[in-house]
Every structure is written in C-alpha cells, then in structure tokens.
Length: 256
Image (cartoon, rainbow, N blue to C red; front, side):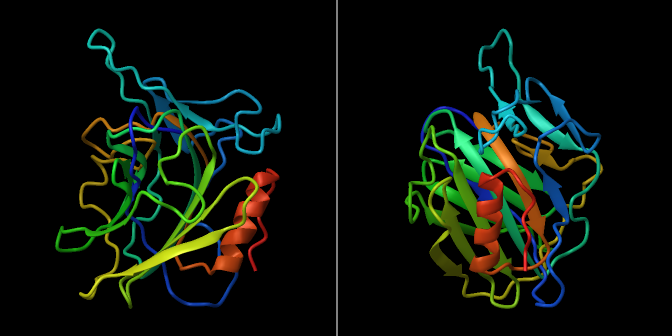
C-alpha cells in the first residue's frame, strides 16, 4: 500500500463519535486479501500477489500502487469505493492503517481521501485534514518525526492510528511497526472549537478514494497500503494496540 519519490507527509480527514458504550465496529474496513465489489481499482492500482501484505503470510495481500510519471504514459493509480464510507457528519473518529513507501518523497501523496477525511504524506511529514461545514478544513501537522520512526521512512511497514474528537478539537497520533507496540506520539489541540466532521457536498462527483486524492489532482501513493479501518468514535491506546497486534498475525482484531 503506497505513494511517490521524495520525503512524504500524510494528510487525513476523518470523523468519530465520542461515546464509550458498545464495542467499536468500523464504518469502513478493507484488508485487500481478496477482490470484492466495494473497491474498483484503476490506472495500475491493484491487489498484490499472496504474501504482499504486512504479515507476509500467503493469505495476506496488500493494495499496491506504482505510479508512472512519463508524459507518454501518464497514470494516476487509485482505488475507488463504490459506496460512501461515512456519509454523515461525525463527532469523533479513529482511522487505523498500514503503509509501506517505496522511497522517501517530497511530493504530496495521499493514502486515503473520503467523505470528510483526507490523509497526506509529504516532506513536512504527516498531515490530517478534517472537513468543516464552513468549507475550511481543520488541519493537524505533527511533523516528520514519529515516536519510533520518521513518518516518511521508506521500505518499512508503518502502522498509523489517528483519533479526533470535536468536543476538544484534539487529534492524537499513535505509531507502531510489525514488531513494536503502539506508541503515543503527541496530541494536538486547536484553540478554536470545531464543528462535526462534515462530508464534502459533491460526493456523487468525488468518490471515496484509496491511495490518491478525491475527485481532482494526481497524488497517488507509491507503495502499499493494508488493513484500513475507520471508526466513528475515538479508540483508546489499548484498543489501537489490539488492532496492530492482530494485523501482524493477519487475523481479525477483537476490540474490547
């Protein structure tokens, strides 16, 4: 699951609900282990061969994108969702996913862009944008350095977990790897109040996109993506670590 050449930054826009009641169930989940009707792959984006997923097991596959940049054969790989992930405004959200970059790149790359959420990787590191009814996104940029690895490290599977809550307008970043547990990076609180994360108005013309920017632009990730999940509430660090550990074993997580 991947982007382009240089030092990347991640930009993500998402939403979550902030009540601790039933066990969390993702509003969207994709492991890429087999083809299905939820995702339409175009322009060179594809599901990899057996063993390309983060666990390395034969039953584990990944989203693979290898952009071509020649003028003679321009392509913008992407996976288009056939349904909207989260069409309603959200009070909170958690997004968890794995990515493996082919090379560090200064060019903007987008692992995921859907409804009210966009995640970007570029030379300044990780960036997440939360859509607002006013049309002005709330932006969070924690920088390049993560608690374990730089967010733009190439050739390594990196686990990213991002939570946001409208009540405090705070975003929390967590990072992990195949063999290192989830580590809290930092929380970023905006001084102004936020509104619920709001989907874009032109969802019919701007499908949910994996591995690229929605509707316009050519910002494909060069690499792989795996095990994308979106929850409509903020998960805690224990729940997030349970997801990371299950993913490394290519099994479904039990979130309690």
